[in-house]
Image (cartoon, rainbow, N blue to C red; front, side):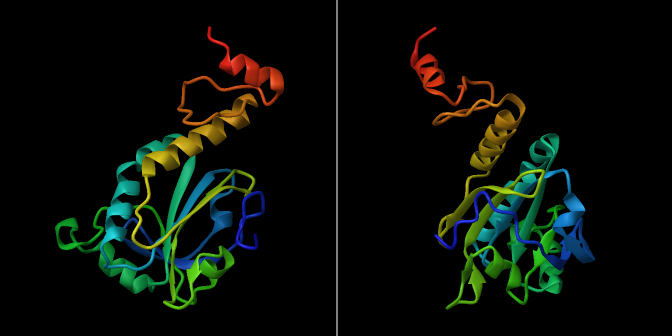
Amino acid sequence: MDSLLVGKKAPTFRAKAVADGRIIDQISLDDFQGKFIVLFFYPLDFTFVCPTELHAFQDKLPEFEKRGAQVIGCSVDSHFSHHAWVSTPRARGGIEGVRYPILSDINKTIAISYHVLKEEDGIAYRGLFLIDRKGIIRHQLVNDLPLGRSVDEVLRTLDALIHFENCGEVCPANWQAGSKSMKPSQEGLVSYFTPT
């Protein structure tokens, strides 16, 4: 269970990045204190599944911002590679228009600290971490390289965390924002399964 980070303080980092089409000299988790953070890793720039994911997060960026969440991408590429990729049109496999920060983990230290480095290839698995406003990892998901993620599921999980923090009620299977939650007790479970 060494790779399980849920419930632990998110490993800190300081790295070069690209955001809003510009190279940023240093970005840190501390820059986003008080926000939810969706930190996701992807294998490499200029690949195939990866641009679909980065665009999918960008397409839903207003939804994350509305919930007080900061999306951050990360791969082992250099910040120069990120900048070239974000300057390449979508129709040519690029991620032009992606605004959220993309970290350069060229030394692989961030991927190692989040336990997502695929060591034999020197790249990251598709790891995703939902970090709460106190810097604690509340959700962790790691996909193998061919399996793209569902950004809608990330939003649903973020909604569940926000609901729990606001109401103290837990979210059952397939819960969606606005649907029935329950008190974390035997009575709450009975009430949840009792038709109204």
